[in-house]
Length: 186
Ligand code: ZN
Image 1 (tube, rainbow, N blue to C red):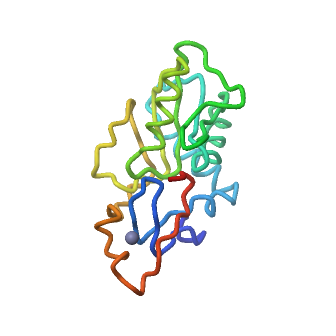
Image 2: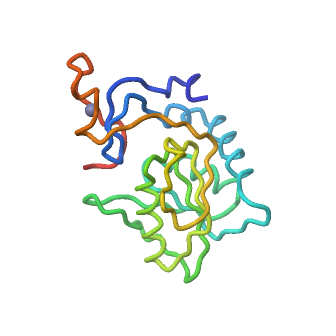
Image 3: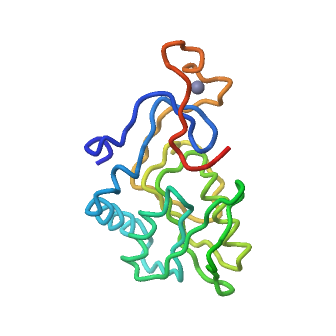
C-alpha cells in the first residue's frame, strides 16, 4: 500500500528520532485515501489480543492522528491525542482521563519508539494506564523499544538508519543535505 501510494520515499532523511536514513515512510500519503485508512485500522484491530478492552484510544500527533482516529472509530471508544508544545509531549485541549483508564496507543511508524514512549508517559501522568500499543510499521523490529505495554505492528520493515555522525549519506556529496519530513521538532 505504501508503494502504491508513492509513500515509500528514497533520499536522505532525518527521522523523528534524529537518526538519518535513506528511506522514509510518508504515512500521510497512504492514509489520504480513507479507504486505506479504514482497511489498515481493521487490520490493526485484528492484532489485538482476544478479549481486549480499553477505555480510550490515544495517538501521538501528528503521525498517529489519522490511523488513531480510524482505530477509535472501529472500537467505538473516545479518541484523544497528545501533541508537542515547545518540544514537550502533552495532553492539551481539555482532554482528560479518569483514574485507571485503560488506554490503547496507536502510531503510524515507530523506529526507536520515542514518540510512543513520550505519549505513554503523558497518559501515565494523567492517571491512565497504557494497555496496548499498535503501529502500522515497525522500522526497527530487531530492537527492544522498552515500551510499557505489549506492542504489535502490521509490518516489520527493517530499514537501516544511522546516528548523524555515522551517516554515509552525509559524507556523500551527491546525496544532498538531509530533509526532515517527520513531525517532531529538534
Ligand atoms: Zn545523513
